[in-house]
Length: 248
Image 1 (spheres, one colour):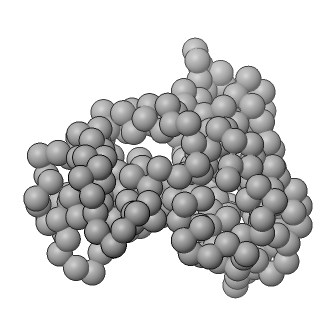
Image 2 (tube, rainbow, N blue to C red):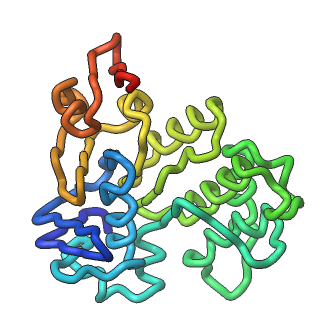
């Protein structure tokens, strides 16, 4: 499953309303969800993964409604890195990363192939030296990389990530986005750094006040559009953009 279709989607909570009349995302696209805080990026990810229920509309995966997929089918269809991750028990780093293999298990027990895949991701995310350490004892950035490894361990055709570089330093941010860009999967990510996103995403969905303001390819981004999205002065700067706001 890789194609995503959204039709007539509406959601409201308190004073916030999200409306998305139509959207199609194709296999392998790298899509950045962008906009100010509270514009609806995280809400859309929650709706697309079934964590929230829309008031109206439908989300389909290769023509199948999301609500028709059971939990196992969803776990094989898409993986999710939420904005915040907590674990109630003192699992080790390796145990957390292995959790991503659960939907792929051929029996009730992990096999050597599952362990090997998990350890490869520990190395990829630069956390192999933390394998036996308790997740709760890690720094915020280390925990984020562990949860990223768990998501990648699901090996799903669609990957959702809500601000994946939160708490990451510059080096690990660059490494993480480079890994995501190389995935054969469809990757849908909420992200704030437009210049970082320009390097690793091909399609940009800009939201404002719960509405899809613009759907653009990388080459179609302009200072005028970004000014409308963020209400700041924007100018082209080399391969990216620079932002300015007058102090008052």
